[in-house]
Image 1: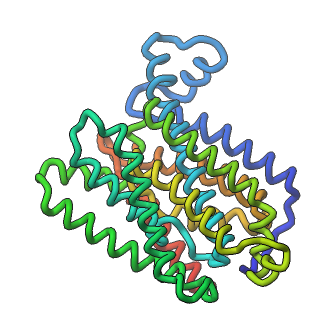
Image 2: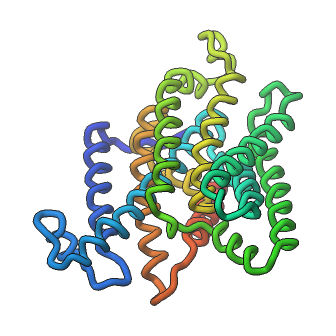
Image 3: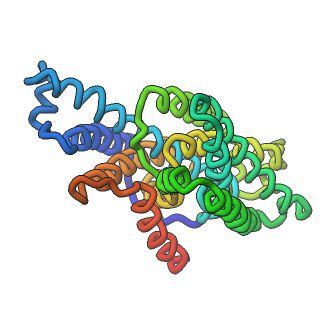
Length: 332
C-alpha cells in the first residue's frame, strides 16, 4: 500500500489526537434536546451542576452515549486498520468483508427469541453470525492457499450480499412491527447506550486491541510479503485467521447493540496513515482515537440535524463512506 507521508512526529500526532478526544467529548456532551448547553456542562465538570436534573442529563444520559460512541468508533476503526494491514488491501473493511452482514443476520435471528433473553443471546448470536461469515470467506479462498489475497475482499463482498439477502428474507417473513424495529436497528444507532451495552462492548474491544498489539511485529512483517514473513518464522495463514477472528468478535458485539455502522473501518485508517505511517501499533492507536472522535461527532449530527428526530447513524456513515470509497478507487 503506497502511502504519501506528511512530516509529523509521533509525539505531535499523539498530542493532536488526545486534544481532539477531549474537545470532542466536551462538544458532544453539550448537544442534546434539553437546554443543558456547553456552559452548563462546564459548570458540572469543574464544580457542581446548577440543577439536579442537569446532573442526570449530563452524567446519566449524554456521557454514556458519548463514551459508547467513542468505543464503537475505536473498535470499528481498529478492525478496519487490522484488516487492511493483514490483507495488504486498502479497501478491506468489516462492512465490505461480510462480517457486519453476518453479525446482523445472527442478531436478527436472535431478535425473534423471547425478550427476556435478548441481552444474553444477542451478542452471542451476532458473534456466531460474524464468525460464520469469516468461515465462508476462508472456505472460498482456501484452494488458492492465500496466493491471491485480494480474493478475500471479493469473497467478502459476495458473502455480504448472501447474508444480507437472508436477513431481508427473514424480516420479510417476520411480523411487521418487529421487522420495522429490526430494520431501524440495522441502520445503526447509539440510542441503546447503557451500562449493559458498555459492559459487553468495552471488554471485547479492549481484549481484541490488546491481542492485535501483541501481534504487531508479525503484522508489520506481513506488510512486506507473505514470503518475507515466512522467512522470519511467521505462520502466515494462522496469523490471518487470528486477526479475522478478533475483528469478527469486536465487530459482532458492536453490531449486536448498535446495528450496522459501515465504512468507519475503511475511511479512518486512510486518513490517519499518511501522518503516522503504516506500522501496526501506531496505526491502531491513531485509527482508534480518530475513529472514536469521528463517530461521536457523527452521532451529534444524527441527533441534532432534524428537530425532534434522530437519523440512523449508519445512514450517515454509509453515505460518507460510499463517496470516500469511490474517491479512493479513482485515486488508486
